[in-house]
Each structure stands twice: as C-alpha cells, then as structure tokens.
Length: 611
Ligand code: GCU
Image 1 (cartoon, rainbow, N blue to C red):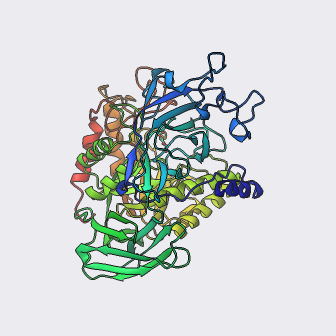
Image 2: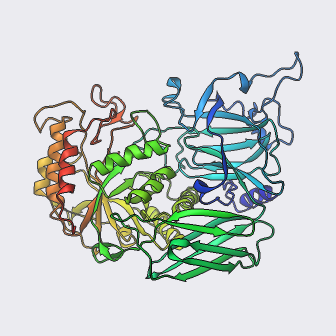
Image 3: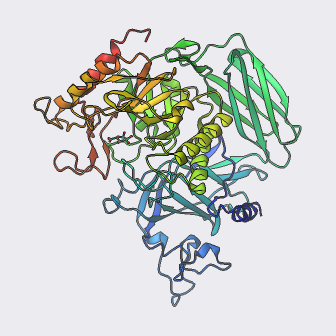
C-alpha cells in the first residue's frame, strides 16, 4: 500500500519521476546477507519491447500486464501458446559487472538490458524482514520480484534497496531488473561526459534479512567542535520501535551506553570520552562499534577524527595537513570495465600509495564502498563527488531532486567513514545564475545532512582582471565552499608546459586551495622530445613545470592530478594514440608507469613532512 501512496503523492506534487525510494539500509557491509552475485540471464532490449506495449504504454502500469511483459518471466501455457521471449534460454552475464566490458557486442551499447536471477530463499525466522539491495546500477533501474514491481531507481553510482518480505517464497523466486543506461539531457550526469557509459548491475546485489524491528540507520562521529565528544543518532525501523532500548558500545573506549528511542524510533546521543585515539593517516585506528537492540546486533568499524579549515589550512585533528593526491576513475583497465571488487580497490589504492599519496579524489561520481572502507583502513583521505558534471539542466526541478537524492544516498552510505573528508558538489560547472542557485541548495542540503565534513567542488580558473598571465577563481560558489578547488590545464589545453613558468596566481579567498586537476596525455612507450605532444617526455615536462608553478601558490594545501590510470572515453578517438582512451593516466591501461609517475612520486616523497 505504502508504495502506491508514495507514487500518488509524487504525481500530486508534480514530480512524476520522483521515484519511490525506500529508506537505505546502512552498513550492509556487516549485515546478514545472501549474495545474488554470479551468473544472471539477460536479454538485450533496445526497443524496450519487454516494457512497452505497441501503443508505447508501460506493461507495468496495466492492471493486467500482457504475458509479453518481460518482468512476468512468462512461460508458454501449452504448445500453441505465443510467447516471444524466454529468459532461461538466454546467455549468462556476470553480476557485478558492466555489460560493455563483458560482451563485445555491448561495448558501445546504450539502452536497456533485462537481467533475471532465480533463487530459493529460506527465511531464518518467520517474523524477519527481507530486502533486496543493489550497491549500484547504471543508470535507470526498474526492479521486479516474482512478477511484482518493487520500484525504480535513478542514478548510476549509489545504493538502493526494496523490501520483499511479503513476496519472497521458499523456492523459485525470480528477480527481474530492467537497466537502461541511455544518457539523458535531464540526467545527472547529463548527455556529455568524459568517461565510458558503463551500463548494468555494476556492483554487488544481495538479499538482506533483518528482524521485524531493525536498526535502519546510525551516525557515530566526533563532534566537529569538541574532540572529546562522540555524538550521533540511531534510527530503528518497524512497527514496534517507540521507547525501545538501544545499546551503543565501543569496548576499546570502555563505552557502553543505554538509550531509549523516541516516538519515531530514533535516539540522539552524546558521549564524552577522554581516551580517543584519533584516526589519522599515520594512525588509521578504527574502533569496533556495536549497536544492539532486543532483536538485533550490528557491528561497524569507525574512526574518530575532526576535519576543519582555519584560514588557508586544512586541519586534521587540529594539525595542518597537505593532501598529496591523485584523481581516480572507477575502472580496472587491466581486467576491463567498472571496478567493483575489493581486489580492484586494492589495486587502485596500492598504486596511489606507491605514488606517495595520502589522499585520493574519487572522480566524478560515488565509487564502490570497498574504496572508502579500504581508505579507512589504509589511512588515505578521500574526496567523494556527486556526478553534477559539466552542463546539466540547472533549471529543471527534477534534475535538482535527482542530484539531491544521489548526494543523499552517498552521504547515507559513507557518513561513518573517517577517511571521507570532502563532499564535492560538482565538476567544472558554468558560473551562471541557475547553476549558482542549484549548487547553493545542494551545499545547504549536504551541510544539513552532515556537518562533520568539508564541502568543495572542482571549479574553473579565469584570467585575473583580464590579464591572461595572472589566474584566479572568479566564481560565487567559491564563497560557499569550505575548500576552494579548481581544475587547470595550463600546458595542455592552454599553451605548452613552458607556459606554466609565465603564470602567477591571485587567490582572493582566505581558504585552503586544492588543485583538483591538472595533467597531460601520453601514450605509454611513445618517446620523443618534450615538445612532441603525446610523448611520455611531454607529460613528464608538464608535471615538472606545473609542480614548480603550484609550489609558488601559498594557499595550495594539496592537489590531485588528472589521473592515476588511462581510462576509456568515447570522446578520445585519435588513432594510434587514444583509440578510445583518455591518456592522461600516470599509469597505462596495462599497468605500466609512465615517466611522469616518477616525477610526482619524487615530489611527494620529498615534500617536507610539515606540509
Ligand atoms: C576535465 C574533466 C575530466 C576530463 C579531463 C580531460 O577537467 O574534469 O573529467 O577527463 O578534463 O580533459 O581529460
């Protein structure tokens, strides 16, 4: 009943595409789950023939959907019956994993693919509740279970779940998912990006079982203004969650506190502790945190640290830090396709640490949870970004709600991860009024949801007072962010590397500055003089010249050059050099380090420790 009410309200409020989102289950990493990873059946459906009837009406909005609706998983009634699909006779595709890198015929495919997974399920306790949880699916996902529509999710990089308690059976359940990765003008991101549009169930899918009344959400973090105070909230969900006992324990801090939930099943708490061993890059200590109710016990591993700014400094636990970073796309180019596994995360973060990094910019969208959980363990600071990229439809209310929902899902998933210090609102967006309104709303939303982290966005640099030899940030959003970040490509898109030596910078805001991108393309193994574009020597010289220029900007507290590894992009088609790859990686798609890698590694390893 609830789902129809949400949809009805959505239509009333004019957000026809406001999708019925269920409350996200937090800390799935440590919950009791059954994996649905593995081989699924799939049907490629570019005409969406399994979704629309011939009058282009969605089958799932018909009172009695035709048998040809793919989500029914129909079978012929008898030998005379007409049916033009059969999932069980189709080929298999692996989940998790984008379809582009698994099926050569789908490398450039943009459209709908249907997935089907059949499974038996024995619930461990009759009164328990059962959910199906998707870590991500790109881009628009319609989920059906045993022939019933559960709901729709929009956005390719954040988790979502639907309850199946009343639908799940002991045998022969079938989960059918329509994934459509078509790029949309009103989308977030919009039509044009500089990365591959990997489609599909790109991350894990699992079944989660919870007690009837369960721990849906919690936030446990250091008070930003008092590092002796652990504060946060816990939310229970179910029909019997009012005035319920909840216990929060952190054994290593000898903390064991009992609370009672309020009328809404939530509790806010503050706990003083003088013994906290603060999480840092040198000492990434994670505490075992246990939350218990009469029906459930949930464990998490949480680091306590404060992150703030003071003038042009970034302070981690009140100590200035210099962010030795690198930008990363979520791709494992050696295996091919979207990165999704712990092994992929280990590969990418090991490369970053080999480079000498203590910080990574996860561009341009939320990466999988393995990346942030591993950064927590390794002591690597993290910038996470909402895919408000380039020129989206700033005046479209549904586009704003889409962006806000994706940011909300990111914060809900990662708010307990100490390593995450920056929420980035956007990348390279135009300084126009509609965008300023849009981003200001997004920043306010982000701060209201989580005031323990810094806000930034990758802005663009401009000439200072019309003088092309002096650069600055001339952007009203620079007044809103905590950390001023900008991409600059002097020496690549703007002159040659030697131009860096002619440029000075005038940064007027008294804020920390992170240069979120600079870089140059190089085909690994292509050598020549440093003025020959696409040679490793050209890229190497760009890094030498840029690092020298950056070192003179006193507010700079770090940077994340573009980019760790070459990555696929349909925009990059120069034969023999790009061939569908953006070549600004310091490492090639076969894992070989280019000469510029060692320039940056040397710079980071020789930075005086105070910086
Ligand atoms: C931009 C953008 C990146 C892009 C890069 C490039 O700054 O943020 O997504 O890949 O430049 O042109 O290579």
